[in-house]
Length: 356
Image (tube, rainbow, N blue to C red; front, side, top):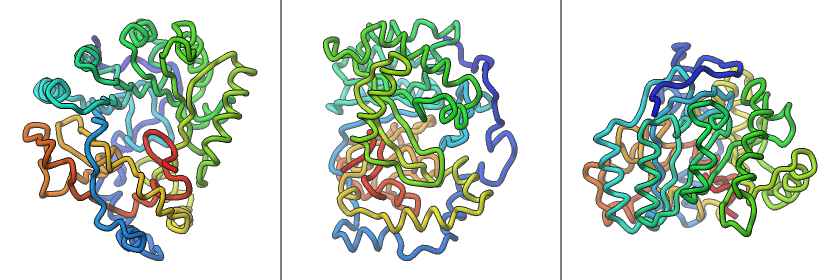
């Protein structure tokens, strides 16, 4: 499989890294968030809810970020992924990750990126994980399936029984292309129709297709249940597309969205909105409690967001796949920061959508 990103058919913005901007540094992002005046720290909010220190409850999901290369450059991307990124998981890390998948009882493997399918060993990871009896999720941007070298993906997904989690900001063209680039919506709908043709979105097949949406702006998502019902009606009516579930995800004040907040003068306002909307019930169900995130270089994190801010797991726990120890990681203390308010605002937010 190719290891370089194919030429994009869409308008591609340079990543923060390519533009050599200060916010391409995780430390600069953490410093900016630390400077925002908020009513209380996240630790204080958890303490008030009798949840501090926050601890993991086990590892139900192993989320693997295989690299930051992508065929798209989305305005809201917290990974700062794009065609100009070169970070890809090396063979030694891939080998160890597969070993962990095959030797532990962790039931779900969640593969992400970038566009994870660009990694030359992505297909091997999927096949080995499925052979080990794991539930495999792939975070797909949809447009990757429209490129000639990746046209095999819908059939491969179906053959392996992969749970496809696909990004689509809105069921109308403008809302999607504003975030993801001109032409992305049209190709995304074409990809979804092809997935439907392979049985995805049909309850009778068991092939699960879920969509992920996040607000196009500085507000919290609406009710996930209400939005899902509306999306199902509109996607069927407007595009003839079926899917199983809709995940609503809060925009995290990280990377490119953090750049937007800072440039528009809305960072303080947005953080205040997140802090004010803190929900103890959402905090109890945050994804870091049952998920372990693996960085492209093998470093372990409590979640994908901590990974992008370069906040590895607590020093008392194993910090790389090479000293992986489930017993030591199962009840680890979670590493926290101001960005965590994004996962606990309103109905909560996680890689699986709302938490309450």
